[in-house]
Picture 1 (cartoon, rainbow over the protein chains, first blue to last red):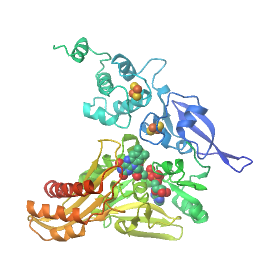
Picture 2 (picture 1 turned 30 degrees about the vertical axis):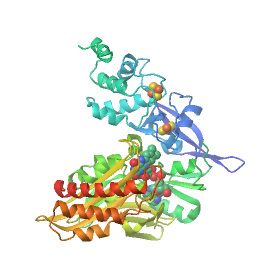
Picture 3 (picture 1 turned 90 degrees about the horizontal axis):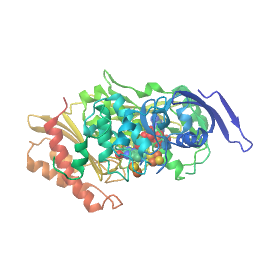
Picture 4 (picture 1 turned 180 degrees about the vertical axis):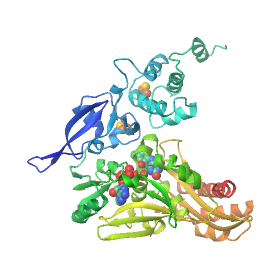
Length: 182
Length: 289
Ligand SMILES: Cc1cc2nc3c(=O)[nH]c(=O)nc-3n(C[C@H](O)[C@H](O)[C@H](O)COP(=O)(O)OP(=O)(O)OC[C@H]3O[C@@H](n4cnc5c(N)ncnc54)[C@H](O)[C@@H]3O)c2cc1C
Ligand code: FES
Ligand code: FES
């Protein structure tokens, strides 16, 4: 609940809000028009959340709001007051990477890496709600996350592998890619 | 991206929100999920002094059936909520399916049914099907409330009959004789693509005769448009492939598409012909459960 507001000399109001980010209650003073992605990055220094289009198209700013993926460039920070937010910084626990992150590395599902935080969060939300998804379900879950580098194949394989507890590709998978018949 | 300054309000109750909107009048806008509004704030099309958020109105996030009224969908139900609604899956599977075609998962978690309607984009996915299902909307203001058929409510691109001090609270789908309905969207990609064209159909089939039919075309007119000539041609007739093709030709002749970056007018007209035929066939064959 917004418990305090401050009005500056130009008459612009600022609101004291609490964002529950990665398990910590973070209190910030924001203007009504502050965008969640900017507050996370600029006020809370959580720069793992990326910004691409700022229009809800690319998904690089994806965070989990109450466990569901949303584009943080399309949410007013003040709308998230009192809500639970997970950013990419909150996915690893005690410096131990999540299975999805391990698999993304091992499957070479990261190239420039710009889409990766959003991709991981969309995948995380999927596996939390559906631990054993099919390939179409994985593709659907990451359909709001654009990747301009990988062509998605390795990302999809990594998420499926993580869901099966198989965190690196078997040798035959590399051979298959190189066109060696097995 | 630049955003104008505004004062933010999150009233606790609908009554408080109505009082606030009554006071603020033209200076305020209502905020649903913000997926359309944030676009307009960022590109400068909207410069409100006050933004009134509906986020505390959690009773508007429900979908239920009310005896004598039909299915009542709260204005704040998200497309994801429509998709996962048991009651809609059981009665009108077409609606969960249509909502699943909207945007991408992030947008479906954040947008709202009320916003999709009030934004009144000619390409919006839910209004055509809701109009085919004869839906009405309930709008509430300080001085009272009214119920308006959705078909009349949306009256131009970005224009509805809602007044600045009104809040859309419910979408009501009356219990009806329709035996089947469907919405077919044609987008340029599977995800994150707005409709080039969309066609919604609701049919009432009795003994292979089309007792009633409603066809609503999206993205080919300033508002979701009924294909009234096609409907007249079909009503009371025995279903044959030839008949459905004639109706599809008629719908294509009636629509008023424009050329824009998503497709030419000619292409859209052809899409209407093909999708109308397919939608009629699907609604007839698959039916409501
Ligand atoms: C990337 C992206 C993809 C999209 N793809 C699609 C798509 O495929 N199909 C589609 O149909 N739409 C699409 N949209 C548009 C948008 O997500 C939907 O129209 C959504 O349902 C809007 O709901 P909202 O609550 O976010 O609206 P808001 O932005 O909150 O509001 C939109 C308008 O409605 C008014 N309003 C909202 N709720 C109420 C209420 N209860 N009472 C009175 N006025 C109200 C607001 O004042 C505003 O004028 C997309 C948007 C984005 C960003
Ligand atoms: S930056 Fe938010 S969706 Fe692209
Ligand atoms: S790795 Fe570069 S955008 Fe996905």
